[in-house]
Image (cartoon, rainbow, N blue to C red):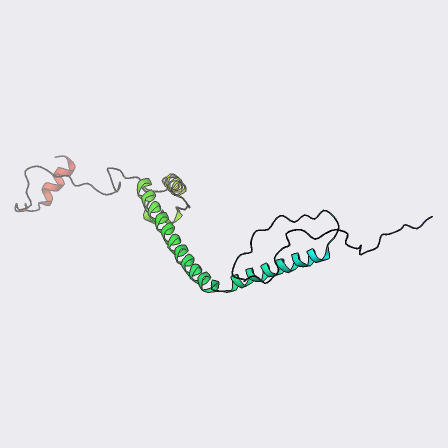
Length: 183
């Protein structure tokens, strides 16, 4: 079996360098690099052009790192503090809105105070549905309001013609006994 022949690892450059070479890393790091023509990678490898390209990329990377490190930590800390304050305010507003919706739903569904803790939900619609369900589920166990609040309680029978300031009649046990026996 014949052995394969491999080409040399570093072929000699056989082309001319590009007409518009990329600027070297001597530019000020604070200014953005000028836009360059797109890199054409077709053709033979040119070591000088590759070296300039790598140097330019390293210079751009160093400029970006320097930009990130100057002045930003104070800005980031201020923005984080502002974000935390806004987040806390939003959470308080949401909590207040949920509590107001819960109170309104409890009042509308006429849920008793001792059952109000069973009303839950994250939105006004969920809270209203929960209040209606609690009112419906626990209504059977609650006493109903009727005209007679206590059925075993004696009712006063008032007779006309007597007033509270009238003198009481003397108690006659014989007359009471006759009235009881029907005489």
